[in-house]
Length: 264
Image (cartoon, rainbow, N blue to C red; front, side, top):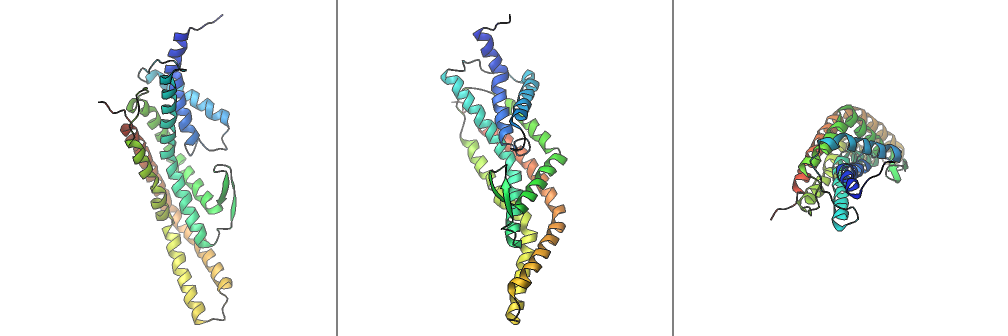
């Protein structure tokens, strides 16, 4: 019969358990693997597999009792670190969805919504389309490999420790969240700009000829022009998503460096 001592279980937890918590928290929030359509068992199995793969290369972690105050602090810190890294990666898809939402409202497809299992709410179809483009771009450019590499490197940049983390990294993470609006507006600018010009032209036309029906003329024009601008702007969106994904990996490492405990 195989038996383990308490010391052996604590050592196993330090080697496998703490990395597993950080990796699982990252996968739960990350946009590609964290999709709610992926079964929970697959996420847990993937997190465990990555933990077993990277554990031999990691520095020695703290051997602390899991039921102690230090063990609870280490557990909470690993969850926070994983969620912070996943949030930095999720900004890429969120920015693309913001662009789709702005473009859909300008076209007049704001009413075209359906239930999104990822966000657990009503999502415009155009925003979901842009989000799928962002996820496919990350997969095509090996963005998920970059994020997994950053996750493995995080254990060296910010080792597992019961020491309290610095709060400077959270400010960087909040500022990075502003990219949702800046990049989202930049992605949607071709569609929004073209439709703004079209609406001004239709407004002048109906002003000159009041007998024209604004809704009968304007909606088909904006709808056709919007889809045409979608087609023309897609080749410009893909490089922006790729660049934003690379920036997200850099923000991850910068946040980890700023979360290091402050040494007196």
